[in-house]
Every structure is written in structure tokens, then in C-alpha cells.
Image (cartoon, rainbow over all chains, first blue to last red; front, side, top):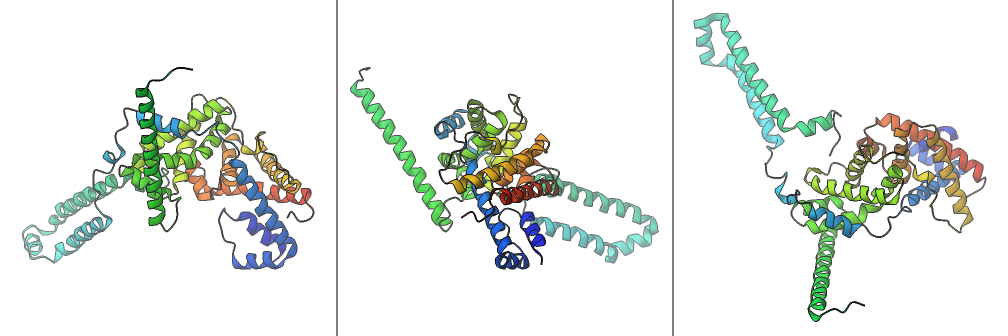
Length: 160
Length: 221
């Protein structure tokens, strides 16, 4: 690995990243890269220290705490948000598997053979409609109860 | 001097005792959390859990821990002390109100920065351009000339990188260099794509590398 490539890896690295082994070895043994990387690290530390130089005039804790607790509309935290116990993902998965299994098993049941014998192929339409409705209800409930998580997962919203 | 009666003195003494008791409770709770998390006193998520569970006084610990960073961000957006202090208060009130929605998927500080960023960009009193920490004139002076060189080089590199950036992206560099956030955390805070953030930071780092070469030919020990 040449110096330029190693330094590019250093420059591309994120805060707190560990460099790939080959880049680390290069930086370790190449004198100029080692010096440059060390200086950049020191500069980064120096910049981070800068952020703590802007201080409010005095501690704002008391002011903030009294403002927080005198807001009348604030209900006690423990009475908010945590009341409804969510259905666990395991239960959702079990319900989904049960629904899918029943769809698969429908054509194998005696009732289906009897109905098929009585009504013929036209039976497929109401069965398919019923399955579709059940599946839609399941999906709608799942999405509604996981709205926040899905929005975050598909980058439609950031975690709040 | 205004003369005070015995009753008033007793009230004040009682109030002092109450405050001391609350402080002791907070200290004890923080120690409990530290013990429960293997000595990690700064485990904000555990503190949030306790607050949501009813230990609302513990919110003071989070305020003490993060007020400076939020205030600093407020200064960048509002560029005066009073507005920055009001902004800090507003951010913490919002954070307290929505504390139950903190799911611990990101660091508490990232979550708080997200609230702060949204509050700042929607702030009605905000009229001025974002001022990076790199532009701050009130940085402390170090007597050590080598540190001074390093700080000048670093500050100048970030300033130069900021200069060519549209205003809305400037905060990305501040969050990376000054507040020590990672690329994904900056994405969470600002909503900008990671690749955009990476490219801006990469450019700034390249400038920093050049500046460090220019400023210090030899070692900076």
C-alpha cells in the first residue's frame, strides 16, 4: 500500500473508526504517514476541545429544571407513552405463520374437497377473496402498530 | 440590610436541607446507575429509563451533562448569549416532554442534538447565518505555541472548508469535528444522506492535512 492510499483511508475514516489492518500497518511503519496521522489526530482532539469553550454564563440547570417542572401541561413522564403494552414480534410472526399455514392447508382439507365437488372451480374466487381480506387486515394491523419503527427503517423519518 | 425573622431563617434552613436531600438522592441514583452499568456513570440511557420510571429529578444530571453542547449549538444558530440560553431551555423542555419516545437506538446525545437541530432550524427568532465553532472569536488562548499552531491550522482548515459549503451543510462539519458525532449520527441529526456528509467531511479533512503540512513542517509534540 502506498502513502497516498493509506492517508486516504485515514481521511475517509469515521470518528471512532478502527482503520483496516493494512492501512494501520502502513501508518505504523511509515514515518511520514505516522507523523501526519498523529498530527491530524491531535488537531481533531484540539477541535473537539473547542466545542466545550462556549459556556453559558453560569449553570443553566436550575433554570431549566424549574422551567421543566412548572410546565403545567406536562403530565408525569411515567404516565405517558408506556401504557399500551405492544405485541411482541414473536407473536406477530407466529400469527403470520399460522395464517400462511392455514392458506396452504385449505386445499388439503376434507371440507375443501366437498365444497369443490359441489361448487366446482368457481369456489376459488371467494376463497381467494377471503384469504386476501385476512392477509390485508393482518398487514394493516402490523403496519399500524409498527408505524414509527418502519418509518425509521425505510428512512422516511428519523428516530425521535 | 433587611432584617430577617427567626421563622424566615428556619424556612431558609429547611429549604437548604430539602435541596441537599434532593442532591443526595440524585447522587445516590447516579451511583446506582454507575454500579449497575459496570462503572459507566455516563450511561444516559439508564438515566432516561429511571426518569421515565418516575425519578424525574435525575433529569438534572442529563441537563448538567449536555447543556454546554446544546448551548454551544444555540450560539452557532442564534449568535447571542440570551437566545442561546433560551434555546437550551427550550430544547431540554422538549426533550423532557418526549423522553418516553427515546428508544435507545442511538446515543442520548444524538437524540438530543436532533431535537436541538430541529428546534434551531425552525426557530422563529433565528435571523442570522449559522456561525461555525471554527469562526468563534472567544476561543481560549493557550500559552503553548505548538498547540496554538495546531489549533490555528485546524481552525483555518475547517473555516476554509465551511466557506465553500452552502449554509445548511455547515453544521455537518461542526457535528463531526467539534461534537465528535459519526457519519450515521450526523445523518440522524440533520437528515442529510451519509454520502453527502462524508464527502464534505473528507474535503475538510484534506484541507486540514494540507494546512498541517503548511503550518508544521516538523513534529507537533
